Image (cartoon, rainbow, N blue to C red; front, side, top):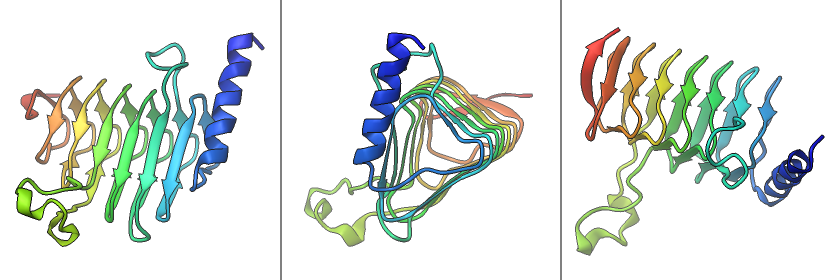
Length: 186
């Protein structure tokens, strides 16, 4: 094993030690450090891969998977690939990623805005809106895309790099842009 490979294994171990939640799944392959946090539930299917060499951020970044409350849940389906610097934060609801998905580098998924816009309500936790996110099977999400609360992405959809997904995307389409809009059917 190369020196860089040994250093990456050490980085992965350090993040595992400082994580407050544990990742496990049959055939789980972790090639980039993952910071797993929170008191909620993280479920990982069979043969999931986290981290891709030599994609951007492989040696410099880390994935962040957080279930902030006991009611929060993140589920990752069988055969899904999460590229480097992936972030998923479930405040109180569920983020579900289907089977055989390809998630590009620096993709971010949130079930909450984590605050409200009105200044007078920003410290009012009860004013925060959380809604579950569901990503279907065989979805491909390009680099740097952001998927926000309450969104459902249909099976086989492709989300373009840098897209900001704020509303539902039907199955078997390409969506891109900010906000993400339909480009064409597949």
